[in-house]
Length: 200
Image (cartoon, rainbow, N blue to C red; front, side, top):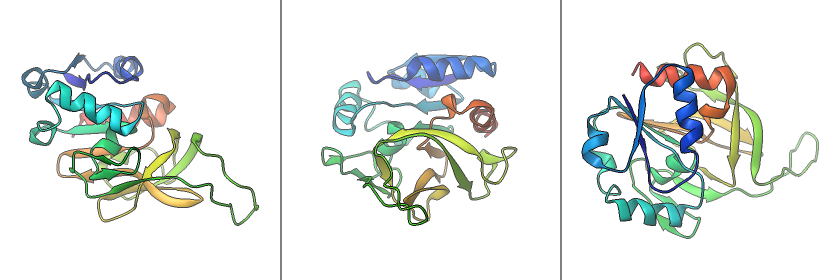
């Protein structure tokens, strides 16, 4: 059973639908004891960091997520909340990853001279750094992004994306995984990533 953390943010239904497509039973809950009994946890997220952290605090989960011992995946804002700090609304986050989340600029693409649009919306390839989460998807798979903030690259980074500058497309530490992209919206590549996560 996969537990999907409900803290008032969007994206719950699309995550449920993606899990349903790969035959994974799931439950949506904001109760720590219920989630603790699940084999895997997903922390989804669409919205702003400050608002989302307030909601996590209100559910009582803000100080509990780091206690999960099963595999945990944060998606998009969910990943950013697992970092130490976000520039969005100057938000202190959960601190599971030491990464800082910064507002993306409008960097010039040096090859074409075209200024890139922010938010970063659409398909882009990532460079996985060789862990089981990315097995079976190729060397430079395309995944779907929707974001205006991104986490820096450090020794917790397990996949990199280039959009003007490099940023962490995915982060991993112990039983915690974060994906800046949306696996639930990334076609067969995203489905394979979710399957790989459920094998962890």
